[in-house]
Image 1: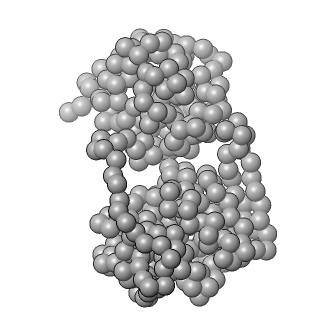
Image 2: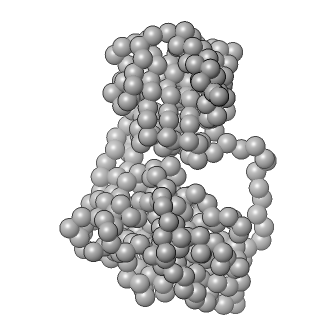
Image 3: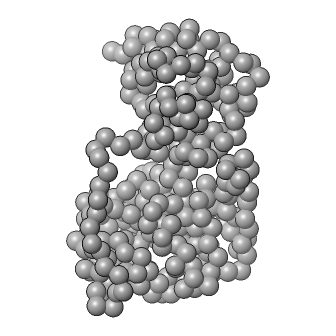
Length: 322
């Protein structure tokens, strides 16, 4: 049976959703095997208990001042002995700034292979199969690794559904390396301005494509998103035209999402866009071109003028409210 170790992320007060997405991916990859989580920080006992109650059979809590804040040196020194002790088949990290920084360092320490930016990970018959985007999302390729242990992978935000349900895992605390051993130190954290958009965490997304025609016509998309309590997404054509900021872009050069509901309005369905949203729970496509590729991934396809269909759908949603 496979053994998977997940590195959880947090901001000191709350666990980041990528932690639960990684646990969800780990359980699917392990197929009934052992899934453990590693939590680094200072004063994070409460967060460790939350991980143990939602997906981790055991949480290894590395506690100490040297891991109070993220540094590649501190985290790597803390992670390596745990991996040596646990001997996992697979180590999963988020494809986040921390994961980008840390994964290659840990892989180099063990002389182990690392697959980055994965959308899916499968362990089967002692082999690891890692699905990744290539050539700006025009291709999806699978990399197979056999024999090497541990295998290390970073997983894109939104690529996996978070683990659900309650578990009764345990928490084990170990000491972090001494601060004096570190060659780097944390200086400060600079936060972006408030109001940033994170589509990877949205449960409902209504997206606009080139078929919207003009920036002022985005109001019909905003109205439907507001009625559903969702967020607005966009294809690259829309953001390249400056109709919406880049943070709304979904696809290979934007963000990957997996909401419960994804509504594509006037989006043709180029592969660069589809790779970023095809893992959505339920996909509705609205396009006047019956041959648009987007219909190939949609659960429901509506052929027609979006300016007739979307306002009617918005009104139907409002009328259905109690």
